[in-house]
Length: 277
Image (cartoon, rainbow, N blue to C red; front, top):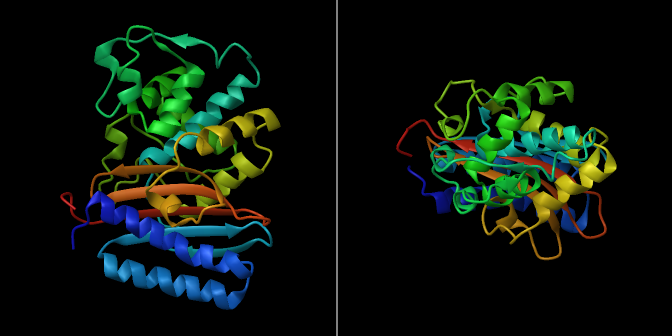
């Protein structure tokens, strides 16, 4: 079965549903609910004709739900969370970094760069590039920010220094979205991404001002009508980053704040075996 982008988005929304239901009345830690969520994920994967990876952490009690959570999946656009965090970590030591204006030429702007394409004449500040990368999925912004950091390997180094030795970013935009099966380049695992997101948005890897800025970037702008956000009811706060790639790949990482409740950290990845999926 082949999946259009819209159908893949609905799949991610369906993945969020068990966690939304669990949080409506009781913590995900209820073992019956956790087992039910895992059964729903297995059924979704079987119906999708693809490979589904999910990791969730209920921060109210540390309970986890996992489905293929330690298998590698393509990062696609979710690498941007780690790249932005690396920028913020540097910015905490150099107040001139985020306001710094980056000038670039039109030939440096790759496809899928609606924001950077419209600012070739003026350039953009590093803060503006982070906003474009996280809120608009702007690939040109991602490349420019990786250039500031020292390339994909510098993003990987930041992840490793932050305690995530699974994350690896090898290529630039748009090649990093190739998502070929069994290619470990530009991949991580759902459980590693959940742990990284917890450290970045809820932990102390970043200083408080930088943590607040990353959260603002990931919650700002128009609320996503796709991915995990499509399955989250009104009144919930969500910070997330989605990504898409070849082989029908779609990814999403998110922190969900239900009303009057500790947050849930969630990472979802879906990919298929055929390049034309």
